[in-house]
Length: 428
Image (tube, rainbow, N blue to C red; front, side, top):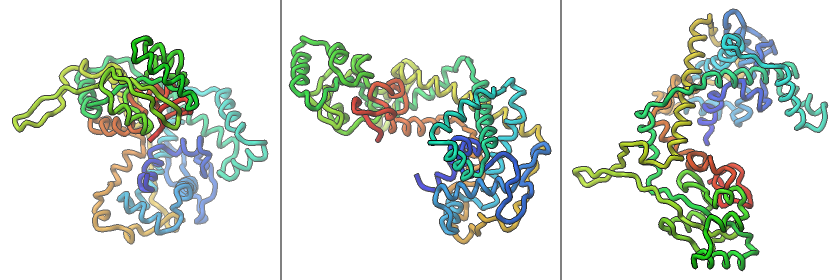
């Protein structure tokens, strides 16, 4: 990931997340902390509550430090590549602080409260990562925070979490939406293969060969053999099933062997860094296609029943999550419109100021790489959830073993998360 993308992503995550969970170098509580140009003016106000310029400056500087953009040239180039001026970037950060204040002020309107005991639990969990209280206090000091500041950050994060959850819906999903996503999945995963495996230790070749011989002779059922012999205990419980290859990321040796198998075929012994595998291709997905007048084939889904049920489950999860996010973002926007938000002009002499025009190419100067509006849309965490974006997301998740069947198989050797010596897969 390049630094341009990193900076966009950090803004999209939001100030609170960066401060609270990463103990980043910012206070972000609205308390005066004294900025580097000797003033502590208000960068903005939200219903009379001031957001100090020093907090905004501290946050921007912490981003620059975290992503090695502390020198003028790298910082200027990063902003230029995003199509942003310093003032526009500052405004995005202020927007994130404004969102924080709206959450803090209006969470109770939806019945959202956070118990002190919950905050205590999170703080104790974080403190347990430090050898003693002295080191914990040193970490807080380095982050420019007191424990009370940190406590407020945890409380705000929990408010935000519960707020989002409050917009969950059981509303029935339209078949047209499901069909649109089904088309995306069918196109992206045409030719996908589902497989099961039995994993043996590298030193246990004799047993592995004996099991393989008995499977090939019809004396032993593959699924039962997986339950009895496989060292991949997660997938063994499911008869060795590790899901669809195009929604996971398998080690090269495993994938190569699977590629050569037709449905119901069983491999020979396959050696990987995890040990010895016996692999069975249990299914192949061939998407329905239509042939145009030019003879070209096009994937065409007319019913949600034309994709595997596991993918449809994932689609329904995604759509519900999308609707929840949209409702939450709409609520935030309504609260912002009802609030008196005043963003003040950027003062002179800020330590992160740079003349971005010195680093713009002709293309970047025209804003073709990324407009301020695009970046601002990311800064408030909003998502459009269009089919095209979902398609890109689906393919990206597939590369990492995080969508469709792979998620269901996180503990069974297929997912990128939790790959271990007992699993046939690893992150790409």
